[in-house]
Length: 172
Image 1 (tube, helix red, strand yellow):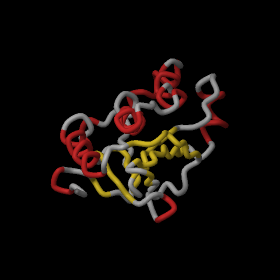
Image 2 (image 1 turned 180 degrees about the vertical axis):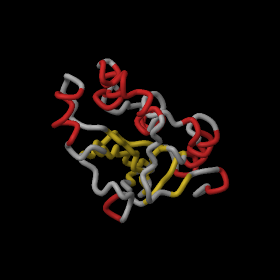
Image 3 (image 1 turned 90 degrees about the horizontal axis):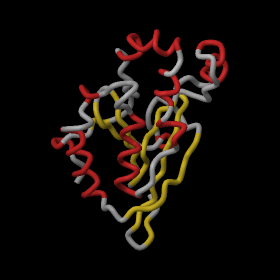
């Protein structure tokens, strides 16, 4: 946690779920180069927050045990926020009960990256990198992506190691 004059540093952790395989196989399978299959999380107040099939979850950042994904491939400094931890946890609880409940997870349209993009804008006014948010449309714009869509739509990614955020589990 960076704390200077009541501001808190906000980081985006970026993981390649394919562990490099997307870079190797995408030209053959999709006819275009993809550098990774991205999972993202927001790190603030000494916790890592992410969204998946279980809903909004948190865990210690990877360097402190974190998720089973290991260390992130990239860390992006998104900026600072004056939003307090209490306000943020209330915000997440509200999102978890409505927009980002586990049953609303959709691999292509409503996933960890749409979550981190929304949360990043709430905290800092900044979006996450477009190469991450544009990935689903990149895949679906290919014939093979269209063939795979019914299979991929049934996948709910929920990295193990997190605690689900809800109004009953508020860290206030």
